[in-house]
Image 1 (cartoon, rainbow, N blue to C red):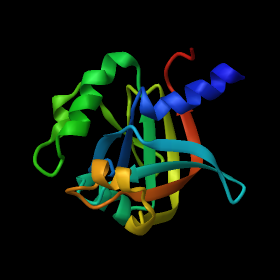
Image 2: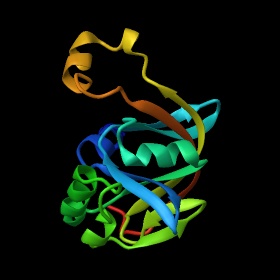
Image 3: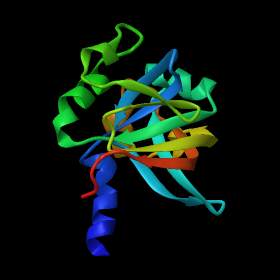
Length: 163
């Protein structure tokens, strides 16, 4: 059980994930390393944190669904690109080896090992008054704090080999 719990904490931090919102004709995706899995209001949930300056933020604001998808290490370069460039400026997905696919009422990628399909049930901007000062200085010196998005898990799709 200890290994399972440890691996859960590493999913976002060490392995990263993609958060995607929109539909197959109009979507945006970005790499995240901050997120969590848990329960709220007796529902399984995923929580992700997106800064308002990120292009994906407007998609999460405008849509009721999003996906969180996880990948093998051989896609690390693609996730790096998707986290360091903006879909506002270029078609960044076309510069990767990933293939967009409809997934529930959102989008994921055919290469994902696992995709969690979420329905947005709560969102709130971080309150600067209660963010620790060291975090304010480190993460928000030049940009507004994150918005927290909580999604109820509607489906989990496993497409890769289980470890």
